[in-house]
Length: 137
Image 1 (cartoon, one colour):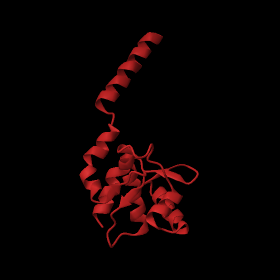
Image 2 (spheres, one colour):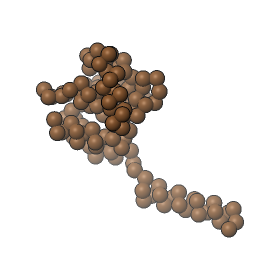
Image 3 (cartoon, rainbow, N blue to C red):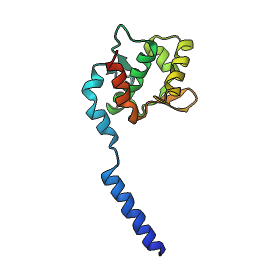
Image 4 (cartoon, one colour):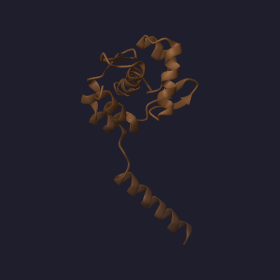
C-alpha cells in the first residue's frame, strides 16, 4: 500500500473515531451539573464550596472539592481543574498532615491523577464515579 493510501486510511479512521467515539468533556459536566450542584458550589476566587453531609469523611470532602474544581474552571473562575494539597487544607479546613493521606487514598484508588508536585486532578472520566459515591452517603 502506498504512503498516501495509509495516510488516507489514518485520516478516515481518525475522523470516524472523532465523530462516533470521542467523548465531549464539557458534556460530562453539563450532564451532571444538577447532581453536582447538590454537593458543591463555586467561588469567584477559584475555590470550591463543599456542601458536605454529616456522615462525610475528609476523603469525601476532598473528592467533592476535586469535582467542584471542574465547575470552577467551567465558570471561568480558574484556568485549570488542578488542585494543590495546600488549597485543600486552606479551603476545607483539614490539617495538611491529614490531607496528604486522603489524597493518596484517592490517587491509589484511581479516583484522581497526579500531575506532579502535590498537584492532582479528577479526570473527567471520574466525575460520575465521584457523584455516585457522594450520593450514597
